[in-house]
Image (cartoon, rainbow, N blue to C red):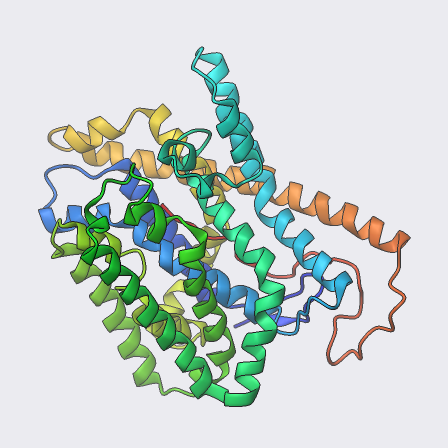
Length: 415
């Protein structure tokens, strides 16, 4: 795991390259689910493509892993470090998010489409995911942005949660952390059972009481998945002690489990609500532990330069692709066309979206992040901390937000 990461209040850490590469896989899966696949593909393959939204539990869990890995000693009582943490997160996720809202607003205006002022306000402040209205939450002004609201909720709570997780790791060790993961698994299963028994699993997504509204996009119900990721981060040193055979088995069995479950699932409502977390807490937790170690065949594949490069730009791909799929007008030709044309259209669409995502990352997301951090550095120099810096062994040698040497995942990439 070559390379290190340094982002303001946390010390240098080896880069988890395989987890960055994993972001590329999940982001492309989400894109494929929106583009659609040619109808001539076997039904089982089409089912796999349609289940791209299972990236929800994976990426909320991954977010918890990355943050707890990089900020294990963050404490809210250290106001300066906590503020720098919040600035770093805003700089990472919000600039491109706001650019896409402005793009969608301008697109509505250019074609004389109706505007939605209250929905726009909610989108600007990234609180649309809390709305009971599905159109406000996932349709107007760039639907994929709903997950950013969930992430901001997690970011706000993180400085208060990580001391608790660190305390569990210190007092009870790996057993305590495993119990946290098990508790999350039991909780997600219990929620699915309750929604199924009460009939709410069958409600359409538009219904404010539906499983989709609560188990899928409500940040409160996804918070346990994020906490599970934090526990995984503290378990990573123990996963590195596993044998090569163990890593190879895990990295073969978990993908097969996901693919077979997707390919042979029923179309019933239970499968939908269970896929929001219950099906995947334990498998994803074990897989992230293994991949985070950097060992195993899949970890090596995901750590290659092309996969890491795609993973770095995956956040931009996720935020830009939904409206561009609509504007490219490729969904119907790909999903309903005949012969080779749908396959050519599918590959061209994916290629165009990847190029646009890379451009958005390189020319919007990254420059804006650097500019925000630069301004933060200047402000930090004007108001230096009165507290004595920690020893070099425990703290980066500066109180100023620094640009990372290696990439840190931007956020979740979800449907």
